[in-house]
Image (tube, rainbow, N blue to C red; front, side, top):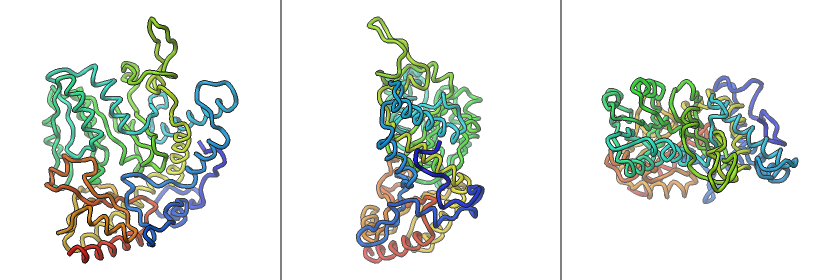
Length: 426
């Protein structure tokens, strides 16, 4: 879907772009992102926090603005022109995201993001099914959003949590994982890409092995969908969750894909308007999935923006985006390795453009503060992954995360700022 008033492809794309990293003018692509032109503390902004949230291209900003200016109405509740336009735009975004993930649109629940999506699985699928003696298997590298909901379910059902551990390099120990898939395991939760280590997990292989053993699989795709081609059908999981604001879309958007049989069997998580067919004081007949899980007025303008973001990413080509980011990651890793006293966490052979690091003798927060004074935005802290940092025996790290709109010159500016900060802290 093309957002109203927005022309595709954008100026950064030559004819039939997106087929390879060399086919895209990345300098012109960068011009699509207004925020990247600003200064911070009098210095040009170097934004290295895309794992936290992605920046928004003009196409997305204009799509949201145009919706509120010309089409604003509620969805699925009115026969007037504005209501029809709003509903068509909202459902067009669902279809666009479904194509992006290679899934059916009627298996895609639109929601506020991965946190909501995983909680939906926890309360509507796991809670009614699990019992004492059952096991939920979770990897060591999970974000809290893929840990805490399972702990809450375990507390209420008597199920237990088992941890699939990792190697010091930051990869899943697959032999140990296969051994951990015992008959008691009913659910496996795993990140497609680690938000701290950048590790790309072999989710297709993992889901295949889990399926052989009758284990349901939940894949957190938050850090994968913005940066690499994702084919959910090929992965073969039971549930896949994505977050829109990491995909250059608005905040408060995302989706849960689930197998149709699961959606039909799961009770609604939240009750209210739009998720029903008929209500009386004697009972309620619920709507068909995915709508029975979408109670209330959704973030309509946000999803219109997410549809524009999906169009934008597909216009560039996800393979081209992945290749560009791998190229930037290689530059950053090599440059950091040349800086004395830097420890990088996560050296997986297949890795996304995320680098968590520490500098000897410097606290992560102090380092991030000094980098900010030079215009460089990195995240510091535990990155909502406390168990992972405990594994490495550190209280916090800095994390520099790249996106296709970053440049080699920005990496050099980051390294120069890091050297300066090191001198001040040393």
